[in-house]
Image (cartoon, rainbow, N blue to C red; front, side, top):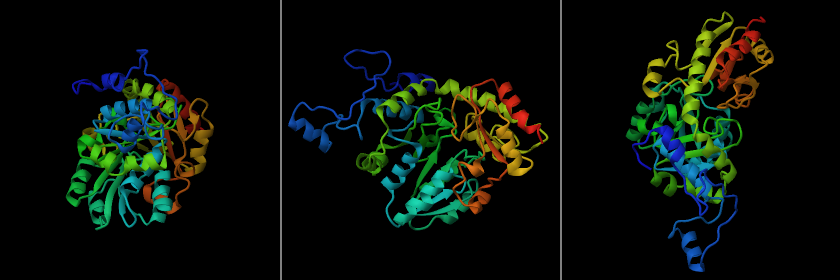
Length: 393
């Protein structure tokens, strides 16, 4: 596929490998294994001397098609698909790190990521130090001789903090460590971390890449030597946190509309964020597209637009926040995001409910904080739904 094509074209035409039936839509290969022409070919496939499909735990044509398409959108040499976004982070860390290694991570991470680092990787003697998402000096001060990986989300979940990818990339290269960026909130349509110097990009394909809340999936992207030869693919091949062919096919089709969906999410989110700024019972708005955002100028430089996530803090704490949720009639009360349907969640008691109160306080996740993942409905209807709860106290 030509490198000169625009992203919306790559999202439709990359990764098409037609079968003998010459189908127009990509085929879905629901099989656990593949047949070899001879014992010699089987041996060559298993040894890696000959490319080709072996067993669906680590090779499948539909999954490969999805990997090729997402790699083209991110500008990556290779993509390794996984069963979930958390499986992508697990595969990345377990594939690249060893006992005694050290991670420096943003304290503004998804709650499950923090639990993975604190409660699972720690058992394997992989320690994590948490720092400010926005203060590069803190990252540098936290790097130790055993540090191997810098890990961040930008924008962060749920406060949409913006980390300076280019500055952290320069730091990582100077210190001889890897930089991994969770690009879930932006997708490659709005942000391309590899172009800014990151070594690894992580996705929860469950979110915007699918786009309709249908299936789970994840991905690790970067250069071939690091991911294929460096251990990530080896971990997936052996441990098996694999994306199913059906899920890959759904995400493959979801990628076809990613550009137009992200454009619409952004336009709707901006309108809702501006409206929330005018509401008397809203204490604070977090949206990278607003000039009031602390890292607005960096977001303008690093991202193509603000994205579809708007977080806001209501006056009155948890009671008021829960009232806004309970008064909603249209917005889905769920922790997922990236869906065509708008979703509303209370991070302190859901997505970040399993981390400590101290960790929530450090990350700025208050009891009055709400996160809206703005969908594709009319923004006027979403504002009316939020207004019902905001006007009841």
